[in-house]
Image 1 (spheres, rainbow, N blue to C red):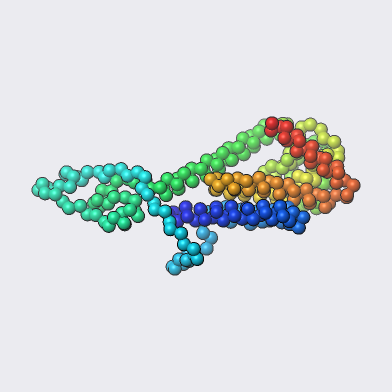
Image 2 (image 1 turned 120 degrees about the vertical axis):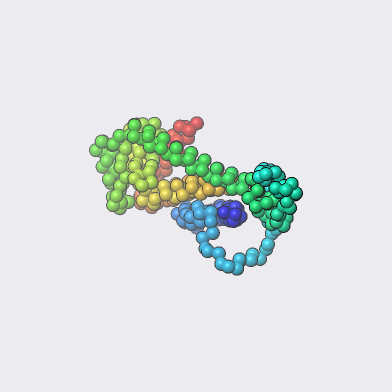
Length: 301
């Protein structure tokens, strides 16, 4: 546990550098490295950042880095006084002082406690312990918040969502699934309050459609978009990025990474749909995506 904070710090610094490299690559060579390959890079990076521990077992001889920096001292922030000895502090039964058993000062400072006598050390709290508990509290708080948000959304779906019964909508969804060659398709549900169609759920995904009626062209493009997300399993990448954000909540660069993952999954999905559609339908698909983005923006303002 004492080595967790240095490992976490090195990991989050390396992750920040990798995010910067991917941003530079995406801006300088956007046409060569498409969103599909950037999503693969985000997946590999998130898989590494998701585990804040060394993946390889450490040998007996530590690996010496070419550049060694002095580690800051683990200062003791708080130390409670040691409890008095039974029968009088520092006194024997004959009234004579008993010499205290101490350890060297450097060993005591490393342990973070004052060892005046065996079993008589007071409680102490070091800087590393405070940082460790603060990190654990932040991670637990973010995970709890995401879990409660998800459970609240599931409760809303159980109360208001209903299966799609319109034959034309079901036929359009089946045609989109056949075009994408999907063996399994998510359930179609109508959900009031949605501004645009969306895919939800990790283990049993459902495709949610707004309660308002969509134009046939817009409905087909929206279904192709969401079913492409389903085929690519983008929702798993987004969930992994959120977990990484919870683990590295103190790093603003990784908050920005979550937005980049969201952007690139949408771009990769659009690239996949446009490869399937004939060129004469590209404009209609673009209008559908722009209209959906505009409705989402107005819903959140």
